[in-house]
Image 1 (tube, one colour):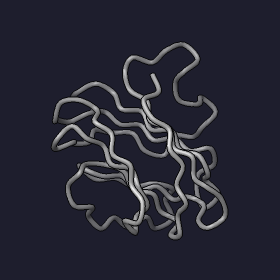
Image 2: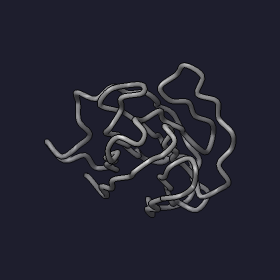
Image 3: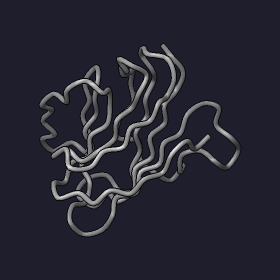
Length: 130
């Protein structure tokens, strides 16, 4: 089920998502996305157009889930200290916060329309607690 949809203008080509805790330094290198226990950073297209982000959670309705044509760039568990997921530009200028549920570790999947510098759409799926 889609629980949120937002658009961001980013000046730096990195979108961050994760816990409300302080964002650690994560080096992307040549990867489309990297993550740690509490956050994921995703390479996106900067300063050209708005970056569209959709947030999904369980249960997934038929036809209303993440776009199956998108490429998964990160999949793994993430700890959400207070049950909230923060999505925003890595510079901290804009951010969106959504209450997902109880605090704890959840399975996260991040997919983009085009991995790398041209990504303009990001689907985030938050699964059940693990």
